Every structure is written in C-alpha cells, then in structure tokens.
Amino acid sequence: MASVVNSSSSNLLKGLDYSVLQQCMHCGLCLPTCPTYDETKLERHSPRGRIALMRAVADGELAVSKTFGEEMYYCLGCLACTTACPAGVNYAELFETARAEVERQGVLDAPKRSFIRYWVVKFLFTRPRLLRFVGRTLWLWQASGLQSLARRSGLTKLLPANLRRLEPQSPAIRAKFSHQLIRPIERPAPSPDVSTKPPRRVAVLTGCVQDLAFSDVNRATVDVLLANGCEVHTPPVQPCCGSLHAHNGDLASARTLARRQIDLFNPDDFDAILTNAGGCGSHLKTYGHLLHDDPAYAARAAAWDKKLKDIHEYLVEIGFRKPASSAPAVTVTYHESCHLCHGQKLSAQPRAILHALPGVELKECAEAQWCCGSAGIYNITQPDTAARLQERKVGHVLATGAQTVATANPGCHLQLENGLRAAPSTRATPRVAHPIVLLAEAYRAETATANQA
Image (cartoon, rainbow, N blue to C red):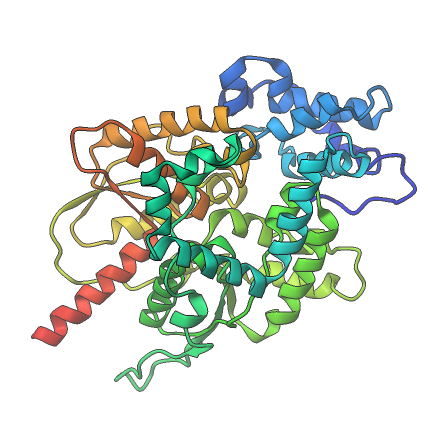
C-alpha cells in the first residue's frame, strides 16, 4: 500500500507526500486501541509514537537504525488505530513505507534472517506450483503418521528452539487443494424462472495458505456463489496476492505479484473479483495505489480495485438468499479479522450472514475487534507478545460459551484453533469455522431436506 517514491530521495519516508506524515494530530485516541501500547504502556510502542519516529527520519533528525527497525516490526499492523483516528491517518501506508526503508538500508540484516526472507518470502511465495509441492510434502508427512510418531517419540525435541516452538502450530494440510476441488468454470443450476437474468460472472481468489490448509473454505465459497446464481471462474494456478511481501518491506515483489494477478484476472471480464481472506483482501484492494505510476498497469489496477470485493461484502450487496433449512440450535461467536474490520471496514456484513443461518444464536465476544496475535507472521517473529494476545482472545471466546467461533482469515483461524486446543477447559473445544463455510453447510442441509421430501 506504500507509495512509490522518488528514487532520488535520501530515504523512502522523505519521499512520501509530507502531508501524510503531518496528518497525525497527536490526540492519543489511538492509544487505547493499540495492542502493543496496551502491553507496554510505552509511547514508542504506540501508533502516535511510531509516527513521530517516522517523521523524525523523514526530517533527517533520526537515522534509520536497528532500534528503529525493530520498533517498526514490533507493530502488529492490525490497523485498529485507523478505525479510532479522527484525522484519517493512513497508517498502513506509513508503516509499510517505514518497513521498506528498514529493508532498503539493511539495518536488521543477519545471515539467518536474510536466508529465510529470500527463500520463503521472495522465492517460495512467488512460485505457486513450488508452494503446492511443499504443501504436498508436508501433507505426506502428516497423513503418513510420521508427524505423530516424531511427536510421540520426542524427536521434535531435537529441533532448534525456534522450530521446536513452531512445529505444534503448523497447519493441517488438506488432502486436496483448491484446483482439485473446484473446476475452472462452474455455473449455477438452471432456474425454472424464465425471467431470471443472466448469471453474475465472478472470479474467486484461492490464496496461498488458504489454498493448502483451507481449500474447503474455497470450495464453500464457490458453492455459496452458485447457490446465489453466480457463474464462478477459478483459475487453477494463482499467484500470491503480495500482502506478505508488502507488509514485510518487499514492495518490489508486491508490485510484481500485483501485475501477475491483474494479468490473470482481467477486471473487465467480471462483475466482481472475490476474496475470502480478510488479510489478503485488505492488500488486494490497494493495487490501484501500489501501481499508480506504472503506465502499463495503472488504469487496469484502478479497475481492479473497483471490482475487488470481500465475499461477505459481495453477498450482502447482491442480497444473498437466506437458507430455509431447519437446524438444531447452536451458539456462535465472531472474532473479527483485523484487516477485514479495520483495513476493509467490514464488520456488519459477516454478522449479517451469521444472523441468517438457521438455528444460530450469535453471542458477541468481548473485544471482538482486538487482534488475536496472528497478524501475518507476527506469531513467528514476536512469539511472546503474540502468545499473550492469543491467551486474551481465547479467554474471551470461551467466556461466551459458544459452540462455534467464526472468523474470516486463515491466520486468525490457526491462531484460534491452536489457542483453544491448548486452553484448559471443562467443556468441548469450540469449533473454528469461516462464516462462508457455515452458510454453505446451511445451503447443503436445505438441499438434503428437499431431496428427502
């Protein structure tokens, strides 16, 4: 989301439109909403404090140092501050630019960090076929029982400390990925109503982690769209959206991946281009800004932004059909993905879908908009703070007594599942599910009932 800046500027922050840096009024309304400030009560760990540091760098009063870099990466990037800000400060642009400058100057460079960034961020996540190969290898490790054997035998204790900590958090990889579950083009069943308009033509983005670990969510997304009269286009091989790269200071890769997406999905061919992952969607809606000075892509990127919709947003816009099936009573609570509610400003739409589900009682969760600690790769880079946020979130979820917790982002989903599984509780662990999966299940139950009749 960060601006493209004049290459002659001494640093990327100095190259920003200065009004962006001046917008902050230092009013402090962001402070109570910031998880890192709440953790430490230190000004430098607040949005206001970080903006002051960025402005000092832009003014040449402060050097980009290791301390500055560590502070920029201590930020979750949850964007809760943007919801609270009365001045409309574009914090996402500021912190992504700051991180890009940290990477440009290499103040955090270290052999291990550089190795991981290159092979994971720049290499693996820019090659979807290779990513699927790695995912298939991980699935074989899990499905063969080798993972369970390694855990039971204590072999995982031989791993380096960081990998030993991360191994239990690894996602369960699906036996089938999105392209094995979804045909490139799927059309809705013919309607008996001859006056029905031609089906809406939409495209579905399958994502990276979503494709490997939550392909069922992608299948459910297509099923829901078909049930609402849409013709669905889902290319079998799709690039990463680039959010991982933009949020971690690699704007060049983010732009490259944005161009690949636009080449694959011509915005003029579709009524809407749909995403079901909150974090991805927040970035996907900024291609127009990301490529605004690219003469070959600027106009197409602007058209892309107009067509890109979150799945909940789109369903509410078109007046989705409420399922008519009967269902046993179930209590559901909702955890809001930070980038869905703060980045995309979508909070009512997922709730509208949950309220439409037969038999569902929606119980609001305390601090539903407070970050769960996943925040992209934050639970990897800042495990202690992420763990405390996870524990806080899980406590609120369990306090609702809900049988299901709905959330619309793969990182949040994994963070909640891992936290709930580890939490001491006297009752059954709540199920974690995407709202669209719950809606698809309701449509399937409706069809099953009709077939029985």
